[in-house]
Image (cartoon, rainbow, N blue to C red; front, side, top):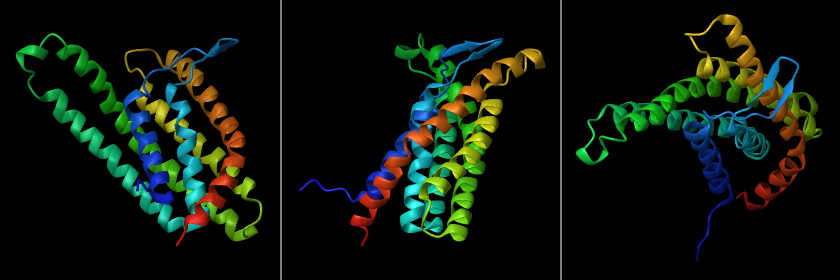
Length: 217
């Protein structure tokens, strides 16, 4: 019979979100224009909030140390992607792939920078998320799950967004002012959208906690 343990499924989705953000997250898309600021979030907005939601669900059921262990595993995944990307783009291509080598290097060369930025931002934000969530739980007990879920997400995702966007997309060949305008267009909508999605996903946190507790041994 095809059976997957609930915690294993959550961790698999967690790792999928990390990998999707690493390989596909460098693309930004136009959302709206507000004054001089173009709101251009990256496509990673569709998966990153889910990472924090899974964090909170696992922390609520299994405790902060279990979640921290999963975060460390996630950091290793990002690190392995970074190392393997370096190896892959530096290996000489076969004759069949010589024509596409430059495109391959361009795409996955960007993934190297994305991986470095993600590794740094992820480390700070994920552990901060668990810390804030756990501290609020210590003060309030098991009540107000919605508060610790959203409060921890709002703060941690702000740090994550600022660090990641700056490290991943700052263009050293452009003036500082141009970078500020561009990065603001990434950071502001990205963080606000993540906050919005955190609120929207709050019922799923309650459902996820209940669902995971039912399968806990």
